[in-house]
Image 1 (cartoon, rainbow over the protein chains, first blue to last red):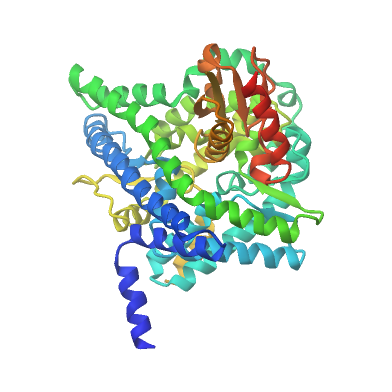
Image 2 (image 1 turned 180 degrees about the vertical axis):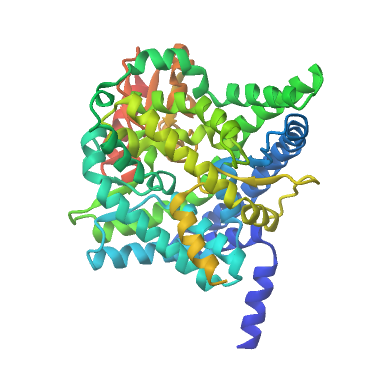
Length: 419
Length: 92
């Protein structure tokens, strides 16, 4: 027995990036994949980690010193870099708790379906990374895998419950029959639904609206990550007092981060896909004929013109808020591309009213900035555990998406009390 | 060679599923395709060169090229119908 424990401990000590590939290999075999295919999936994930951490290095080593320079020159205290959800998901999957999450998440969902405590069969295995992050964060403060997993289960239960609750509203507005959205990035903003309802009762305010087409024309450039990267990088470089050459360099580097990061995470996704497809088939076979919702990625709602327009306007608002909100330390960057996921429920609740969606979105993102600021120390520690080298100095990392996730924060705070 | 845009919310997660499925579909049928995996908000920037848009997101805009919704690739239900639809467009 002791030998077995030593073996497991030795394996966990191998470093996070080895663990998930091995776990995916074993899961693949469990779902009846050929060893060669399962091995390829595992290896692909290992490769993806290498690529993602290269790009995160590029991000923090360029933006970190520039943010520092800006802090020193202007006194705006934005020394927490928003690394964005692609990097955040990688930090989560690189945690030692990660291998447990996919099987555990499936079991929890099946149990809840069998006990009729949820109507959502979440086939969106990729977004289990939100549960993984929850677990990794609690593990980071408690050192207990069990506590981490309990936290992940709590997060998943909230996600499924919110998915059930919002399904009728979402299916009506977005025309998504039989579908619910349990994506962690989106469910955190469900409280915005109440704000929208309140707002739409106020006389005068309830009649405000705007036309999505003209907004997309005017703000369209904020929808293209490559330009956001270039622009923000250059502006921050200029504010840090860089010379013209350096300003162009950092702008180029940040444009590169915005384009390369998704490409790298795509490799991670490719590695997870065979297991995710097997799990989906397995779930479909057992529960497919019941009257349930199929839980999908919030992406299925995001092409709606009102969502695109709302998110476009919120990009500059988010940057502005980060500067003027007292106490915020997050420098928005990576997750400026994630705002559509943040507003999916809000726009649905507002029935496409862009003005109302922008107002409520502004409030919710402001809360997220504070939450992301609050968890920055522990987030930074998790990133370092995942072998991410941060530049010397006082730069920290966090993200608006999961770092600023309100559900994640509440569950974390509860566990933090006991540790 | 047809240029096919594959779009989802972030151009990362769900579009990878569709992207790989179309890649395989094209290979099986010996068709060469140029696949561009993008965000749904970037479709406009690629509209000039595209022959087809396959998306897991929704879109209400009118384009000069056909648009196929690939939500079935995510649910795993009715995938074959969508594949047949895509194949028909690729063969045109």
